[in-house]
Image (cartoon, rainbow, N blue to C red; front, side):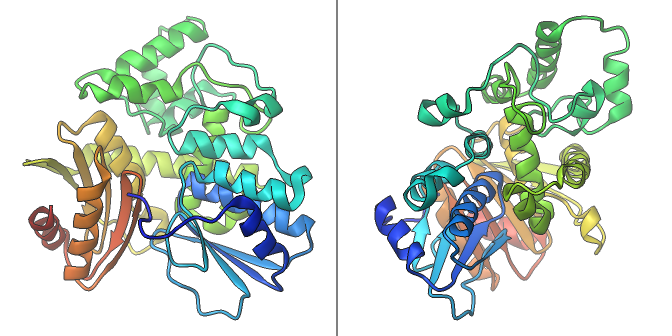
Amino acid sequence: MSAAGHEEPAADRVASRLRDADFVRLVATADGDALAATGLLARALRECNVPYQASLAAVPRTPSTDADCTVAIGHGTGEVTLHSTPLSVRAVDVARELAAESVDPELALAGVVSAGFEPSGSLLEAATLERRLGVAIPTDDRIDGLAGSTLFHAPFSGDGAAVEAALEDFDGDDRELASLVALSAVQDAPPRAAEAVERALYPYDCERFETLGGYADVLDAVARERPGTGIALALGNDVESAALEVWRSHGQRAHEALRTATTGRYDGVFVARCDAGEEDDSDAVPLGTVARLLFAYRSPEPVALAVTDGEAAVLAEDDTAAADALGAAAANLDGRSTARDGHGTATFDGTATDYVAAFREAL
């Protein structure tokens, strides 16, 4: 679900535009890759003494601002758009043109992993990370890490007591722990789960959050839940404890929502209707994460749709039809959407049932 119709200029042209601006607005989608890209650009702008403001939203709006330059990261509503996935790699190219010394390769690689890609190339060489056996979690506590992770979905995911029970008689090493996670994740899951769970295995060690995969998982959680904390994290501020708290809550609610959702299989789409939760944001369903887990570990169809009253998230094998359906269904219900590379989010005025009907008709 790429931002079709928006030509992406060369990195040196973007850097020149930003360097000459009196004020830059960075407007990003709320996901880990976009957050990493935002942090990389913000660090470079700070190094160049260019004032900026950064924001994240599930469905970003074109800001009403006097900024000289608005950079749309992951969508197409700015004077400059960055939409090539991984966004963090594209942001590195621009940041190197602005202030090469500002580039944090671990942050960039965490964005790459969050986007679902394997780390490689000059960034991996610059980070000099070592790979090891085991599971990619952001803490040194196995129970805490396995319970909170959204890199996979297993019977014990989201539940610390269930993880303890699963590990009660376990006295194996990291290799055996990885095997336990992999076998648990593919149990009663579609074939694509075997590939999806590999994101959580054989991790790279890193300075922040123990492993690169754990770092990516935290980035994605804070981007979706607490954008302010996410931006502070991407800027290198000391907010790791707060970010981990957000990550724990996010994982618990995502896995619980997936388990308790009412599911329906239709021609080409698998739908999970989730309870909207209370008005308090701390109880809201993280639909983007639910859609990703639904697609990887539950959906027998090529499109997975997670929906509540007023909001929906989709993940698909073939992005074009799903992107069109996401936008058409939202527009039909006086809403908006944004999408790229197989995933997207919509907000709308109506019930989950209204949106599912409109999406199926559009698809």
